[in-house]
Image (tube, rainbow, N blue to C red; front, side, top):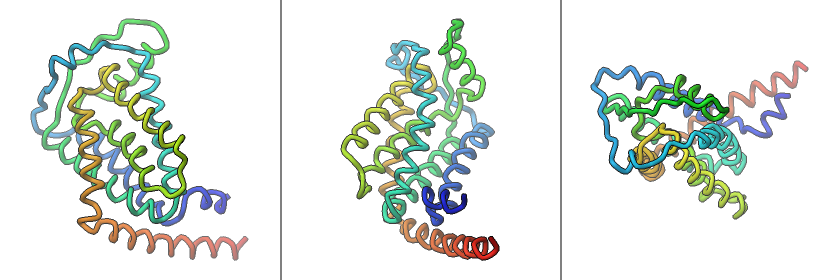
Length: 230
């Protein structure tokens, strides 16, 4: 069982992978506790966009995209991981800082329908309050899934195109189900690119590599101990 998991998830990315999700959860929950006054940045263009509950399906499927995208990045090799993950972690850290010091808020439409998409939209609204919107982490992570393909050595053009198209659908979904504003989408892309750009220049990739190597060494020792005891 351990060997099978190890085949899909290299030992040296376990901690960084967990860190990125911890930062994601911190941004989601702690960011909403910001003591600063939330501001509204809705534009006439946002108000002109229709509310389309059916796009909530794309919004939810984005979580599947993230799992698949990150697994594919990890399986491509250590070099790809080193180039993508430090930038991703830095981008989410920047987003968390923005959430805390400059929280934003928006008005959502009342969902009165009784269909599956309407029910799912109400559920998402209940779980995720309309705060900490800029930048959109939904768009940030989907963009990273696509941008990560540019660092990969073993990736098909078909996969790259499909990832890009689905990322664009996620952008449309967060707007059409009124989870985010246009500026949130642009902010998500911008923060992702800033993270990817700054991480190697701040030598974060080297720090990342050192931490991963240390964790990998400890996991290998634990694996060998399990093998000897089995």
